[in-house]
Length: 147
Image (cartoon, rainbow, N blue to C red; front, side, top):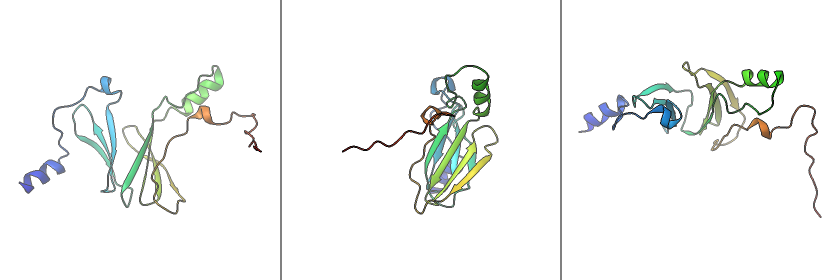
């Protein structure tokens, strides 16, 4: 029994068939694990498409930024430049090794950057929506004091 279970685990075999990507909104799902890996699963086939093993310890969280999620609602040439520069789909991962890795979510899954500086486990991360950032030339929000 154990040998059959190991074979099933090692082949990343799915049960119950695949999922239609048009219904899921994506062809892939990304998972994080205590085995220090991040896996990209193909929803149509149910098989692991790619494994990333950059972390040295438990991967606790993942943040995904779709290719179009950072595009603002402004119009004109400046908007086109913003759209083209932010059309990269990204996946960020973090965990017990106190490191954040950011990957291009496209086919090659290349590492875009590595961020270090936390003194403890990184338990949460998120991409900040560009609409929440101060616009160029605008004053930074001031802290108001309440009495």
